[in-house]
Amino acid sequence: MLGLLFTFPTRADSASELTEPETLIGLTLEGLYGLLGVPQAVYAVRGADEWQDDVVLVYPQGDFYVYRDRVWQLGIKAIRGIRLGDSREAVVLALGEEVREGEDYFLLPIYGRSWPITLRVNMGGSAQVAEIFVYRSDF
Image (cartoon, rainbow, N blue to C red; front, side):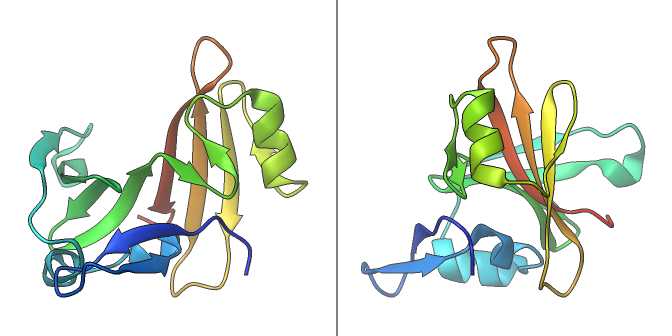
C-alpha cells in the first residue's frame, strides 16, 4: 500500500497507532472520539447550500469535517510524501502520473475503499502547498 503513514494516539493507550488518513473517512463521531478523544476546538463551515454546512473538529492530526454523524473530509498537514509548504515540483514527483493537475490544485483518486476517495492538494499564491484534503468524492 502506498501512502505516508502518520500517528494517531488512542485514548486508552499512549502508544501510537499508524493509520492511513483515508481510512478515517466514514468514521462515526463515537469512533472518532474513541480514537482521538475530545477535539481541541470546533467550528462551522458554511456551504453554498444548507446541506453543505459542516462541523469541523480540530485535532493535532488535522481538521475533521463532519456531516451528520460521520467524517467525510480531512484537512491534514502531510500525506504520501507531501507536506504543507512543499513546491509544485515536489507534489508532481510525489503523486506520480495518475494525478490530475489544475491551475492551483492537484487531484488524485485513492482506490480500494468502500466509497470514492480523492486527495486534493491546493497550491497557494507562492506556488507552495497551502492545503491538503482527503475526502469522499461522491459526497
